[in-house]
Amino acid sequence: MASIENNYVHSFLSLRKTIGFIGILFPFVLWVGNVFLFKSGLQPSISDFYYTGTRDVFVGSLCAIALFLFFYKGYDGLFGHDDIVGHLAGVMALGVAFFPTPRVSHYVFAIGLFIILAYISVFRFTKTNPTIPKTKDKHIRNIIYIICGIVMIISLILVLFSMQGRILASVESVTYWGEVVALVAFGVSWLVKGKFLEDINLLKD
Image (cartoon, rainbow, N blue to C red; front, side, top):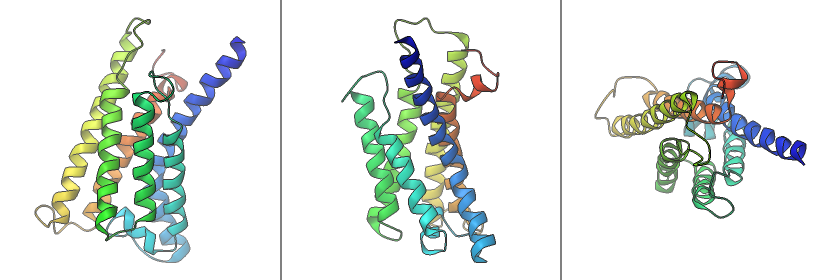
């Protein structure tokens, strides 16, 4: 019985790490694939890759992230708060994938997705099982979660202002790079939640 439970735990941690890796690699795979396979360049934003040869990668990656978020479980059990938040994030990810820019709905889904992901990082990942004493390593992980959530929100704000031409208007693909920073922060948060730092022996528990 313990072996089966351990397998479930390892599978769940692997799921979290998979989400993290997809989040980090997603924008770079789009860019590199577009350059080398389709002889096109960097796009103004990640969503603009929908209109390039890497469209299938764009939609497929977002659908994969959405699927994983739907299956995300936290401390609250079935149909608890974490379930609801994960489902909402999954819906937002699907909306970003299937309602391409420049539709208003696309921006609503994209903004909603980043806000929910930041919320998960800052307020859900930092929760501690009340039956387990809070360790020094847990404190370190919580600091990382909070930093990642703040970075996501700041990046989102910068992207929104840049789209209005109020800041960094002269910087090429500033929206793309702002989204990259937000996605990397999202990916790092989920990797840490999946105990990636323990896997590479930077933390113990």
